Image (cartoon, rainbow, N blue to C red; front, top):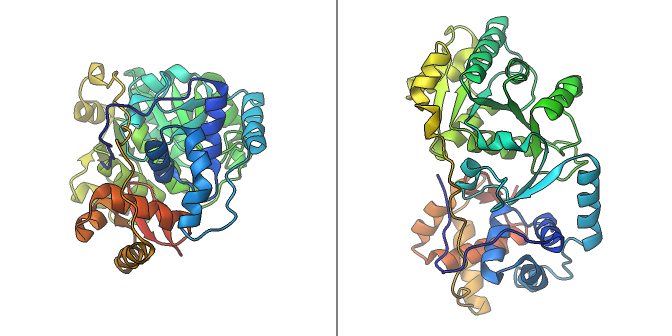
Length: 381
């Protein structure tokens, strides 16, 4: 699990007014400001308003002229659209924010949620699997979701076809959460419109994307880290060797969550990912009792929200242009198209974490590197 902690006695506080909430929205929605950059800017400047004021200069130092943060009117438009849909904006540090998700270094600073918010504070278990699931796979998903729901778990999944759909349907009565890849008001796939409406009425839907945003391929790995981050464990029912479900399983391992898998026939490609997970140490699942045994008593579910990252006592030292360019070149020379852990890069450079991390923010703003879920970075494609 990757987390970033800054040394100071002042915690990063949640917004306390509507203006603060709009400030968080503006900062996070500003061009080339991702989750990690959001936290770093907040840590260095102490508030969203100060970070927004500093952002054009930060962008200039990264080589971007005429940079404009997200406007107040854009943020107000998103806020109005989300509220008009019946969704609530939940920010990290607020009482409603789920404690399991808050443990993550790349936890979403905010997300939209519609439905039963209280489900976020119950024991959560993720069920994921193949979109083209077999009849046995969907039967297994239904059985697991139904029995785990009866045992007190809330089932988390991604509203996809196949295993996700079966799991949500079986857990509607006991509690289920659907995490969207697009906006909270954009249902994908459209064939699950009725199911999504049922979940919004009886369970919970959530998304870190702005309302109205159609999901794109790059959004689903980000969504998957939320599915696993919310949950005490991830159960993979059917998954091919290269699939989104295995991304969720890898996220779960990085986040310190339990990974469990249902075995399948070696000749069935839809089971190859699950069989690989079991080979590599995932808990084998035959029924809900195996899941409950692996996760332990429900009473042990986390109830205390972990502390948020702390603000630094002082910003990192500024280098002259020549030193900065040399460090940028050194960073870029160690990166490639395959993602690398930021912690590993900092160790390789033998640099002080705050100073190297600040230069990574500059490189992200300039579009030269891309951040990925789990604290990973790569050269921009």
